[in-house]
Image (cartoon, rainbow, N blue to C red):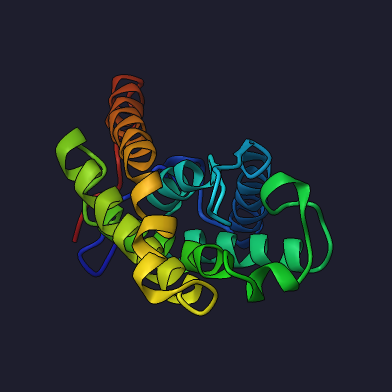
Length: 199
């Protein structure tokens, strides 16, 4: 039974609830984000690369729920900062968090939490609402990223370097995630796995 107005997330539907299961989900999800970071495209004129990390943040935020998703992103940041080659292009180290792209990395945490919070309230059940959840999470992510980038580039160049080149790609990632999530719920419901009752 899910309390406090929450509905079940996809992670809630995987077996029973336990600390061990949640730990596996958190660590496994952090590794997925690290894997997605290796898909990197460098754009001319901007220090911010194109990666598949936002897609992972969108999907994992909705699948795990707010707290588990935020913990997964914190674990990812800790792994990369400790020296594992989990940041974009196989980079690592605390300096990445302090550099021009550090705000985007740090923004994974509140972005995943926000998306998970909305998913816990049923926003991942239809494509339209799922897209809205991803869009709001993307706003949080870019707000963090642009705030940090502004310390390294001229203020009048922040949007040109840190937002405009990524709008189309991130919209496509949101559409992909928003289309996949309701499909997963349909598959689980067809299999007879009913969600816990809402109270």
